[in-house]
Length: 240
Image 1 (cartoon, helix red, strand yellow):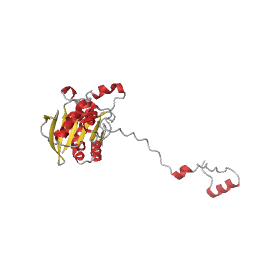
Image 2 (image 1 turned 135 degrees about the vertical axis):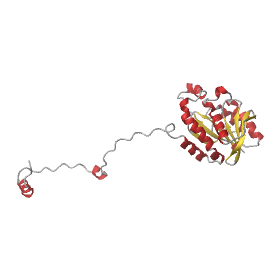
Image 3 (image 1 turned 120 degrees about the vertical axis):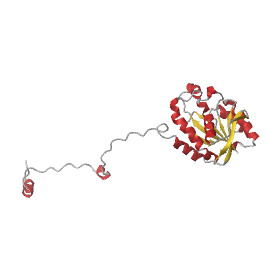
Image 4 (image 1 turned 45 degrees about the horizontal axis):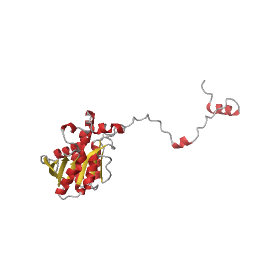
């Protein structure tokens, strides 16, 4: 059995916070894959189901973010699972909004939910970091993280959550790179990528050989003398 944990804070006042995007991912996985109804257990909301032929326990700790490790640790101990069975979905300040990165182990990046899980289980578990972007200065971080997603964010947030749920079987199979690629493709476009610069007018193509040769001045035809007389005899007198 595998455990997919989404991190967030319980309660309606936090429901749309950027800090709760882990809960949002868990809810979309729950809906997409027809999991059982949520029930209260291990100081959390839990549901079970099957993804890609593998039994999965979904868990949303209700201990508030800073104590997430208590609930997740209790669940893993109950089922006698090692941290390698765990995947945690959570918000990441240092990722561009809409980007997802998956890796095993690593630091907490200052995330209190991850610090708590590390304290209870160690670091040998998989982290699915969901980018919420950085406000630019340290003083604005708290308000940004605990602020609600803006209406315009739905343009990338809804396709992102759907892609995470649809491609969850790749996580079950350990295909982390494929999961990230598929999610990235799902959110690409006007909201997910920079627009292509307008093409510059095309210049007339010149042979690289001609570019390398200096331009030769035009030959001046003499107006008088033996050469002029000979040319007039050959071609006749030109029109005036």
